[in-house]
Amino acid sequence: MFTLLCAVCVMGMPGADLDGEDAIAKGQKVLAGLGLTEQMPLVSLQNHHYITKEKCWSVTLGTKQGPVNIVLNAHTGKPLFIQAITTPARTRLTNLPATSKTSGRAHTLLHQLGYDKDVVMDPIGGVQNGVYSAVFRRTVHGLTFFNLNPTYAHSLWFEPESGAINHFSPSQPLPEVSDWKPKISAKQALAKITAWAAERAKIKHRQDAIDPTFGQPMAELGYWNITGEKTARLVWRGQRVYVTYGRILPMGAYTVFVDALTGELIVPNDPGMGEYP
Image (tube, rainbow, N blue to C red; front, side):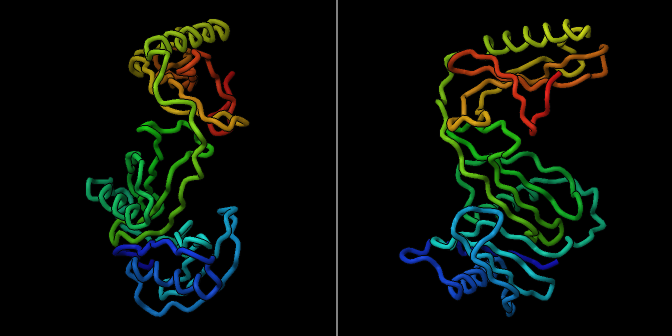
């Protein structure tokens, strides 16, 4: 697997859009900034890519370790996507857990790519399929989005031993948000959510909706963008609310929201969250 290290040179290109030759040169410069200083012959050049609707150039360059695809914004030259078109190097460190150094490497890569503003990183798990996977959720006023499809997050993969980047894709554009200061308290929201769960358990002939095995219910503030709505709502998300068959085995964890401005209960029917019985 190729090694992409050092800083990415990500500079805006004022004036006219990049032409094909500019895009090739920019792609080579980005990779060189990541530590690839060898000759990088052009493999392919296209003025479109499935990853974005923006005007872009998709540049695939050859390296000793295999081709690398870089998608660049046609106006600014900023990387929109990076993908090594090779299988990540197999590593004997398959079960290697993440450390503070791992997190630091992920933050460094995101900074080098120019996407480290207003983000919070999810905990990184162990090595999977030869790489670490880091997810940086975007924030507005310090609050994240609860959506899973899309996640509104930047994603990057890198190899455990070399720190080489294997894949990068940025978040989709953020929707506008309704507010960031709740009018409904966490206590009020949680009372509404647990009342809903208890009624649901009764309808389904199941035991109590609150199973202490999984900890006490809690409410977390963030945003939820409902399909078809242009503005993401400020919501309280109920967590650790379960409908169970018994005291231990969970039937399912309901992710239910309360609009933090109006108090409306929201039970999403979203493919990314799952349907609720």
